[in-house]
Length: 289
Image (tube, rainbow, N blue to C red; front, side, top):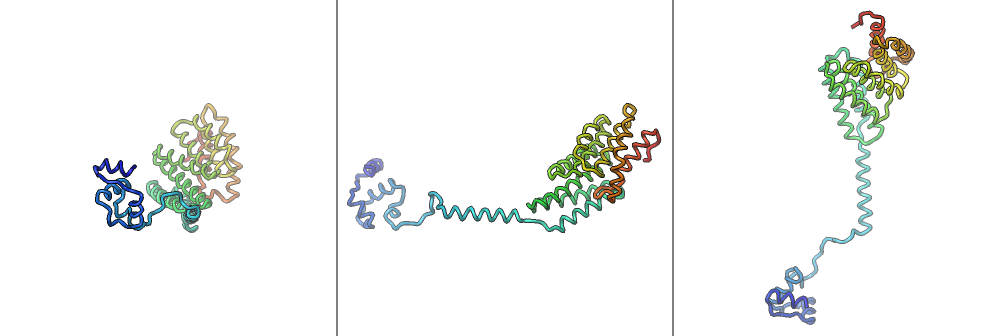
């Protein structure tokens, strides 16, 4: 019926019997009329020679055989594991650590613009290594290095009176510290953030962030720095009685820092300098600029 309907649509006076179809399927097409060939090609959407010719292998379009799916899944897992195992040389990370120490201890001796350039170059190197490794220990080390360098660039920007870039850099350091849960870096960065608030927004904006930072600060250099910044904020006439309390909290921390051999990755004079300036301010003496 379908062959006859297709023939009518094409204006062909032809039919296809079962016997004729069997002859076609067996390859005997010599007596196939041109009209019948055209109708067959139109009905089955293939050239007549392809319809009656030998079978042509085609790609499977149905469901993927289970064995193929298993092998593909295994290959994907192996490829991902290979990418995950990619790592960087430990010496490359140690080189960046040494660069952080060099910049930190040489902070007061390097002009700010040169310091920013060198710190930025080291930070970009850390970013490059972060893209090349997936190992948790190496990622943690590199995020710490990146956070330390952002903190140092924040200090340099602040010394150049570039307030907004300084705040952006120190917030980046806070983010990296939170990412790897590094208490010392977190406390130092938040202390610097509070110090910037002191100079740009007034001491009344310092105490709350300092209290929040002290709640999670480790004992040592970071906590001492926070206490010194807090003392600065309290050393105004309306709260001058609170400054000695903050200094008293900082004193044992400073002694502990000295007993441990000083700050490890930040220049040592920061907390002591802050303490001296707070004491001078509280006593009404000129600050030792």
